Length: 259
Image (cartoon, rainbow, N blue to C red; front, side):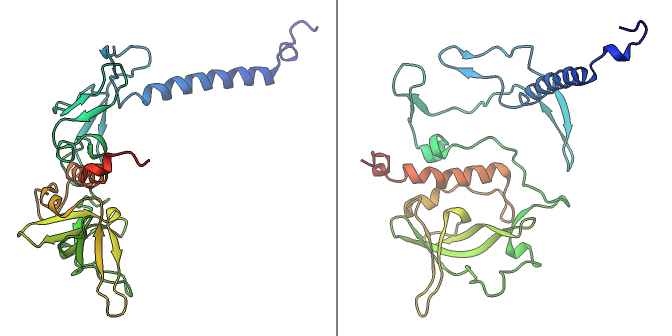
């Protein structure tokens, strides 16, 4: 060994490996902190709310929203609404059963999240999902069937009304909702396009829109929108949850075992 010749005694490859390990450890610690900005504190059975902890929970950070306002995370806020459910058994992990109208109460497959009661916005800051009557620059694609005027049929084969307008996503250029004018009232409700089965006209046969998740009697209970030309994030969640919940709760027979 030559005294004073430091470089000859250092394994640079091993040092690089150690530095990579150190960087990787710091990266994992940072990511594990950041993924705890939402979803905490945890709720466990039967102990209830778990301690927040101190090692992996990050300090609150204020985020600037793209169209004004701020959001703070983590905020450790819990939902305050009453859950109309009860446990079927006493042991931890037992399933819950609804105690009221699950499609309205928002439990099980009809559950919804407390999202912001403001509309989703485009990059320009305008409401993203609007009816065609408010977006004159949009129209159904050439060669496609215009769904407006088609009869809407529920899961029990009841004719509930007709499609009065199409609600489109101005950013994605997609139809998000069908606006249905109910036959037995002057009310209009939204049907998610993903829950509608469109049967286009063939020859002399008239087209129709089938919504099998709910029955005719349920259309009157579809959650309303506060404004006739826009839908908020919270309203979207409630509307979609209502139709999704109907796949299980619209008919008691749907809750029975398949076998």
